[in-house]
Image (cartoon, rainbow, N blue to C red; front, side, top):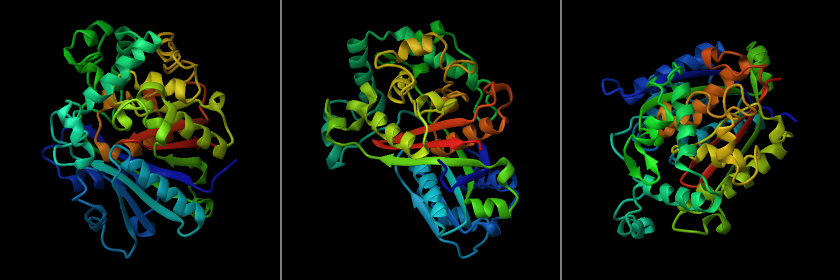
Length: 388
């Protein structure tokens, strides 16, 4: 099954700390890269779809203004960690519907230092979390992972193995900060953040941007892009239902971070839309800001049984040469997490992998089908990409 949306170009601004650069500079670099990769000028773009959370004051209008006003509609999305994925999703729908033929997608963010808060005093919907010490994101997710450890027997060593793989690949990822590799022992000894998480089991906030050009088939053929185009065969999004929230306050401590229930439901829909199943997936980019996230995704996306995610990583199944490579660029833990950019950099990585442009991190065997998973405070997006 095909969906009439194709990624024809991708670009990125290297993730890291860029205090000397403006948000607009980060986004412009990524957009220029995507336009060049696609072989078109900005004048050919018919609509822009942009995503950012904390940098939303620098909204899509300011980014587009850098390239000159061309009269196109500008759409801005703010969905926490899934802001970029939301922008990508709507761009795909727009070109597939025929409303437009060529869309620009960009996710970008400049983050402050320190812990990312999931709630603040004064936000009525999350006020109770502050009183329980759960308004800081690591504490929420640590509780869910601890409960998972009690249920399935996962160990801190399993979490460290997942994180060590991230650092190994992240050191080779030219689009990331290229932090040095870390051993399992170093990760376990890196200082407790919120048990069972140590410092090196947690992603860093970061600055960065990623962009993509999305066209329908008619435009891709017209501009001569089809030979390198990657089909977006499935685009699905959803928010939690009541069952997903059982187990605690808010989606971060409910079903998904413990069992992957929400991911499992969205995965079933995107597999159906794309006409593929778990056995067809050659590689995955999953949203894992903390160690254990990849283990949960491996289960929820159907690559192993519930409770077997830790062993999936221990046995090397998630490695480049494994059964189903996961987070081949180091993922959030090693790459960093500029919220708005994260969903789009997944598109960047998977597009390059399916084209065979992964360099030192290329998945062997000419991968053909890839899946992206990105969540933001419960709003989950899943995309399936196929090299035709």
